[in-house]
Image 1: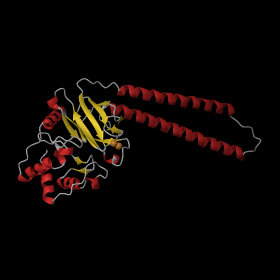
Image 2 (image 1 turned 90 degrees about the vertical axis):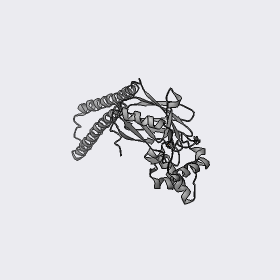
Image 3 (image 1 turned 90 degrees about the horizontal axis):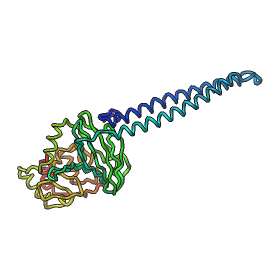
Image 4 (image 1 turned 180 degrees about the vertical axis):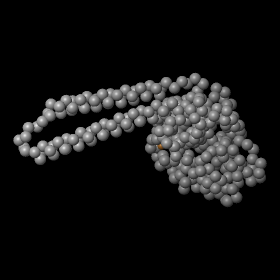
Length: 315
Ligand code: CUA
């Protein structure tokens, strides 16, 4: 599990700094208020214990103290406001030269990632995994297909909503390599909790290798079982919703599966990707992710095995 305050880029570092300033300031104020409360209780207790006619001493000093404390808390509040405004400005100042442009569309309940390029033949799509190069700014265009979702990778930036019919952007940069947890941060229905994705930051040369590989069509299956699996995929209902580049499957309702086997999870973080998990998923996605749009497919065992064998070739 990632530590949400362990910033991996400038945006998250600004937000973490603001968080720590707010925390320590509030801790100091809390301690001050508790000390004043304790002192007032002690004072009233002492006054009650003393003779009722004894004069109340130190009244002027007390008034000055209360006035200064009120002034100080106003100053602290304005200070926090200022810190928040300055952080917001700093977040908007990320240099965007040479930025990588990715369009992320949120669906109930998965993420579609399209890597844009001026050349149409260099555009490619993945799902539930955002791979980015270290040290290069990324501009993510956010769109939603159905309801409002929220894009949140705590190690890189704050939250931003994806609103149907509107297009917004979020910009960030990862300054070190790593795998960072991404979440949907707005309740969006039954499977809101299983709308996870990973952001994988790779050194630039490894990112370039990865992107070149993603642009290639799906590899040709060789084993007889996998070839039969592809036949089933292309003649059955799979291709109505899924695309596999280099084949006639061009469905757009579900995730693009061209390099499916290289992904870490199935069903947007629902289950780790393995042949056994995949078989369970194809057979009855509703058991693993109730409410998901993918219907159950109770296939004959050898058909299921052939489909799994084919999908496992999609590295
Ligand atoms: Cu999508 Cu919560």
